[in-house]
Length: 457
Image (cartoon, rainbow, N blue to C red; front, top):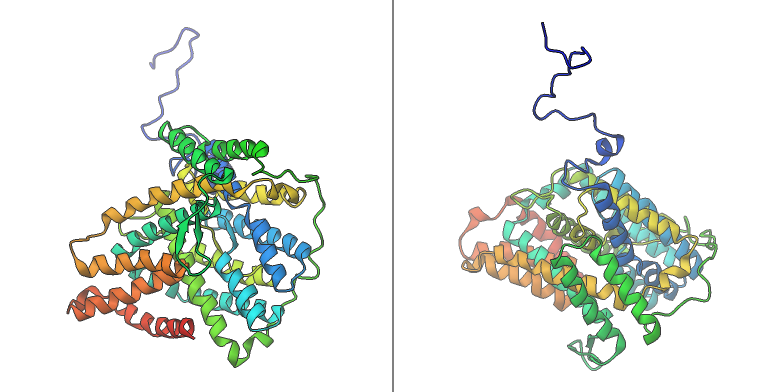
C-alpha cells in the first residue's frame, strides 16, 4: 500500500524535474521569464525608453512646422504614430524598441525637400510612403533579412560601436558640452561652466555609480534627479499647465499626395529615404538587440522578419498619419541597458506616449540635460563591441573603422553602414580574398553606388 500522511491521505508525488506550472497569459505572449527578465524589470525599462525618447514629441513637430505642416496637428499625429508603431513592435515582434520618426528623415523632408527645393509637403510625405512600400516588398521577398545575414560579423560589431559613439555624441551635443563651430562643421568644446553641461556630467557620474551597484531603475532615477535639480538652475522649465487636450490631427492625417510623389525628378529623394532608413533600422535593430542579448553567435537576430514587417508598416502608416520616416529609435538602448528583453517593455513605452496625448506639455518638462547622461553612458559602454573586431587583419579593420568614422563625419548612421559595406567588398576584392565576400553584397553595391551619387549632387 502507498504511504499516507497523518490524516490518512496519500501525499502527491513530487513534480518531475523541469516541470512548471502552466504559463500565464503574459508569459505566453511575451516569454518574459524565458528570456531571463521579470514584468517589473520590463516596466522600468519601458518607462526608461519612453523618457529617453520623449523629446521626439517636441523636436519632430517643430521640424515639420518648418515645412508648413500645422504644429498642433503634427504633434498629435506624431504621438498617435509612435503609440501604434511601438505597440506593434511589442505585440507583433516581441522586441523592446520605441518606433518614432527618425530625425534624419524628418530633416531631409522639412529642410531639404520642402524648405530648399520647394516640394509640397504632402508630396514629400508621399515619397516616404513609397519608400515604406519598397521596405514591405523587400521584406516579403526575404531580401532584407538576407542582406542582414550577409553582413560580415566584423561590420556588425562596428555597427554597435559606431552607433554607441553616435549616441554618445548626441548626448554631449544635447547637453552643450560639445558644439559645432559656426565657421565649419568641426566640433569644439562647449561652455563647460553652463548649468546644463554640469548637470549632464553630474548625471553621468550618478548613473555610472547606480549602474555599477545594479540599482533597478537607474536610468529613471538619473533622469528624474537631473530634471528636479534643473528647476532652481533654470535648466528645467515648468510649463504653465500640464493638462491639455490634444489638437485634432485632421489637417495632417491622410494628406498624402501618393501619385504626385511618383514624378521622375522625385525618385532620388525616395531612394535617399529608402537607403538611409534601411541601414539605420537594420543597424539599430542589430546593435540594440545585441545589447539585450537577443542575437546569436553570428550577430543575427532570430525572427528578424517580424520587426522588419513592423518597420515597413510603420513607415507607410506613419506617412499616412503625417509622421515621416518611422524607425527604431537609438534611445531604445536605454531600455536594453535597463534589462528590457521583450516586447512588454515596448508596451509600457507606448502607454507612456499615449498618456502624453492628455499631458502633452509634460514632454517639455524633461530637459535635454536629463536625457544626455543616459545617451552618453549607453553610447560609451557600447564601444566595447569594437574589441571583437579583428584589428590584426587590415581587410577587417579598415571597413569597421570606416563604419564608425563616417557615421560621425556624415552625421548619419545609415550612411556609415553603407560606407562600411562598400569598403568591405572593395578591400577584400583588391586583396584577392573573394571567398570572404558574400555574393549578394556585389549586387548591393549597385544601389549603394547610386545612393552615393545622390549625396554628391
